[in-house]
Image (cartoon, rainbow, N blue to C red):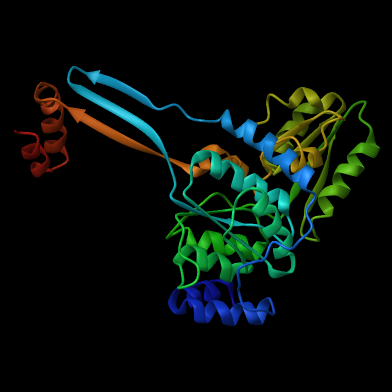
Length: 337
């Protein structure tokens, strides 16, 4: 059965379908995950602290402007009410990358879904962060439950987190009905080997990304000609770019990449696990148009417009002229008070 059919089945039949697909694909019914896994508490809290400090700096500014006398516009940022976090099996670092920014933003409900095999570990890490709603269910059926809701798992306003090709397909399918962060996964890296670079370090970077699975994309680009290398990176728009040797000079010129790691002392693994920069990043060319998860992922802007009687009179001619050319007479009448 296809991902689309699984998603539609859960949408229509709720918990019944969710249980059936969980038993068929995971071997167990979906349950609240128990926090019995043994987590490296010091490392998890150190990462959470760095993620918190970095994302606290990302608050967008609320703005207010009187564009004309008596015509005031305001734009303010508010948190989402409920967010679903998909955490691939046992990836506690991904939990931190998604949950901590959501907490900073003030999201009211954070619900985690994760494959059963690693659920106790993820639940234990979630408990360290103060998150209690963790479900041992993964795959496309988990995404559908978050998107449409069941009697067991209430629907959310947005789904975030990386996953397999099946999870990403499910996220894209449900994005008609619920917001998603971005398609994230399978993992990608492009290593640009500039003049003077240590090839052994390049091999370490490729091996680290290949560890994510057989569908990982690991590419080495010859950086002897920096302009050609830049063109290649921009064309690929990869999740991660590593710049070695003289290629470090390209860092400020690359536009199409999820994250850029500059120099021999900046391995991608440091960003995955330790620096606090978010590792939920666009893949499959999506870096041409979107960036990785940040604080704004868990916020939305609301626009407020206030007009005084004098302000309305000031803008009325503009409305009337445009309404006339667009053949919207009710719009013109609506500004006559």
